[in-house]
Image (cartoon, rainbow, N blue to C red):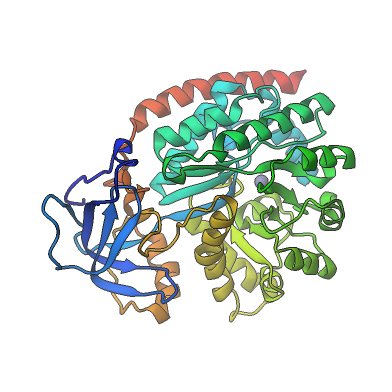
Length: 457
Ligand SMILES: [Zn+2]
């Protein structure tokens, strides 16, 4: 356990920038441009939730500074999940009546599109709360969520935002616009996106909440609705959409590009079924392609051409698509899949590393201007402490081996977001985890009953 709880409370966020705490005696991985490994290092946490001085431990501290002794643990930036669906959390273990779905369109129609239509406002809130606690305990400080609850649309993003605030994580939200439930539902979705984009435009303290404009995918959106979305989207906001996840959405890049949907702020989840010309289009327009390797395996939809995407200049990040809160597992799977795809054991290192530790932070910066994912002066203090005491030399040039074989498997001790501890000693400290689990479980029982009834209807 760490020595002191030096949490910076939200009340302190608006105060002048003064040193609030210093984490000392840590082995620091900075993930900055020099990618430094600092032995016995310290990081200053300022009262506004940003990082101050970073360096060796041992310098004199101003009187009254809280000292957090990391006990030699590994300190690195909190992880980032660039595409997830928190609404799927309460589906864990749900029974789908009848024969198992045989393909991706059947998975969508029989499970996800039926589940999202069943969700009420309380389901949305508890799904988010549980999913965020799970993520926090896996060291994830920032999530970009893609939400759908067609029968509880208006205000749904506020309930998810409430969960983010209660757990204390950083997130950007959007609502999934689609024509699959008719024009009226599509219009409601557009209104929810615009409303939440306007709400977050003023900025939450410490940049904890951001937003994008959600689209489901080209194959469930008419040109007319896409044009409505383009018209309604506030200037400066980007779209967050699925792109070519299954063969049913092949050709999506071409169509979305022709309509003017794609640009440097677009988050395009998956990009699996894209041809060489479409990869060129993604690169030219600066689109952020979000790779979700475990979900792709689970749905048997294919493997991303991550090497080709990156070689041709597409900014590819990493998400979970709601499959798992553990971004370490997504990182590993991204790496392994490229070896399998190419039959070449030499590949995948640079690409998996870049997606998880470089591009994800750049994507967060592009979506809502937050400087996370690196330990440098001025960046947000989103940090994790890991119980990792390397048994072999750890240097900047052999970091990948430690990340893959060691740090990814080591227990998380603490997560700090915006200078505030969210997890300590492996437990969420911002709320009562067990009480949330009990309430969520009762909510899930009700959701499952309603889901079962909708299957019979
Ligand atoms: Zn998705």
